[in-house]
Amino acid sequence: IPGVIALLINSSAYVSEIIRGGINSIDSGQKEAALSLGFNDKQVMRKIILPQAFKNIIPSLGNEFVTMIKETSIFMYLGVAELMYAASIVKVQTYQIKEVYIVTALLYLVLTLSTSKLMTMYERKLGLKDEK
Image (cartoon, rainbow, N blue to C red; front, side):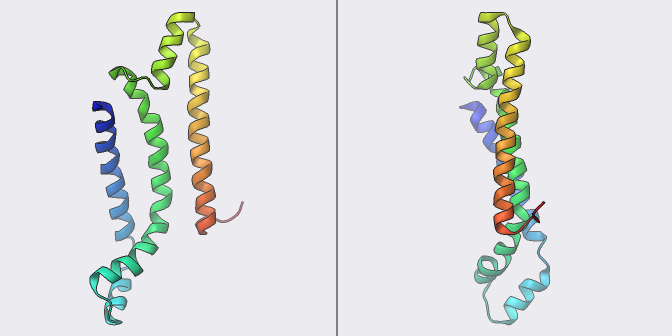
């Protein structure tokens, strides 16, 4: 539980900063134009600012998800049964240190690459990236 709480607090700080930056990246003229059309502050945020900011937020959130996957390896030191913890158990039982860490690294690579690929597909679906 302490590891999850620590990861939650750390990631929530980054995510809140990502969202704040995405909202601040929208030109203030957008808000002024919406207010001049008769929108109230809640409508401006919900219908004008957030949809535009969402496109700016998605790539950074994807990077944060990948970082969270990699940061879970620290849970091993708390005794949580995650990938590195399982690797240390296998290492002790088999005495094959190099092979265990290579397999673990490959598993982390697969997890991070698949998450990155999913985020890239989602960004393309939203029209944030050009086809390559």
